[in-house]
Length: 175
Image (cartoon, rainbow, N blue to C red; front, side, top):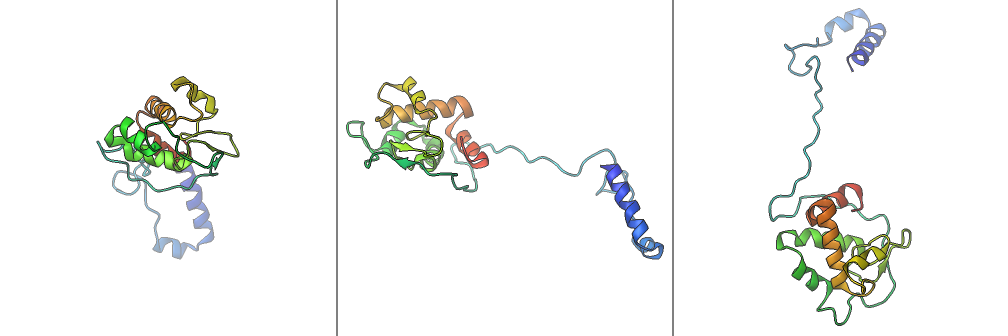
């Protein structure tokens, strides 16, 4: 970086007449200049996004790359114990529910039978392949509870929590 700075200064001095250059001296590197310190960088990395306890992260919405297309018209499944949102509220810790809701809303729009046309991802959590959800139950294709149990386990295992999954979703566009 210092070499680049020196080259730029030399180019500046060759283009600008000496009388103008002396009117605007180039700052010297060193401890006396608080803006440029020799051997260090003025650019500091951003701290990681860590959700506050029992609070969803403050994030910016990033639209999905492609929307899942429903295979069946009914997004809820009869006999599964309520709507997918009601089932999620019974499975997901309350402090993580809003993050879980954001991930599932963005991934599938809470449609149990959603299919991503470009990737083939399936269901509420958009598992790829969808058959991975069979580890949560044999009825994974139609049962919201099975899909949500799988999704919560996946988010906890891979990202530490649904809020960790949401942070990843916002930053990368997928979880």
